[in-house]
Amino acid sequence: MHEMTLFSDLLVAEARRRLFEENVPRIKKCLGELSEHEIWYRPNAHSNSVGNLVLHLCGNARQWVLAGLGGQEDTRRRQQEFDERGPIPTSELIRHLDETMAAIAAVLDNLTPGAILQPITVQGFQETGLSILVHVIEHFSYHTGQITYFVKWKKDMDMGYYAGLDLNN
Image (cartoon, rainbow, N blue to C red; front, side, top):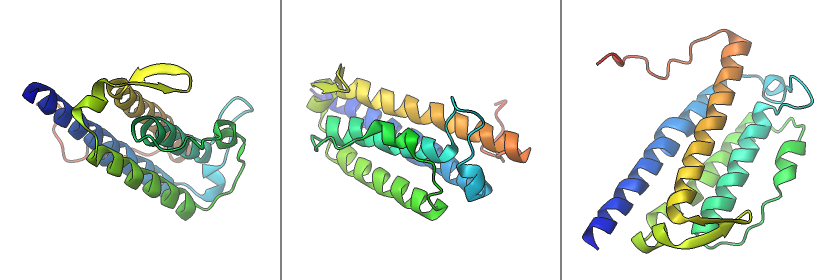
């Protein structure tokens, strides 16, 4: 069982790194570069605004981690994440993101090795704790990339995510 505990600890540490040290700071940096008008801009009827994507990430993470792994009530109203037209103030979006991440951190703090293997139904899908964490990390990365692309397109700027690092090492 020692190996399972080690695996669980490594998985949770990696989830924390990807979510809390990479994706969330990048999202906040992007939000800081955009006006509220730009945050709620939709290029066409089939695209979401940056604001919608932030709401969507919070809703998805709450459903998958808080309700799925944490056993909390699932109160998500997914379509509302996309129907919102804003503008919700940037500070409120960031507060919502911070509250979501604090709740996720609490679930991760209490995650047991057994929960990593436990079958859980989320959105009608049969998952495990492992697949839930992989999904949430992947989902954050995907939409963080979309948000970053929007800022680069709108502002013609390098986000500097790897500034000061030699990535050719």
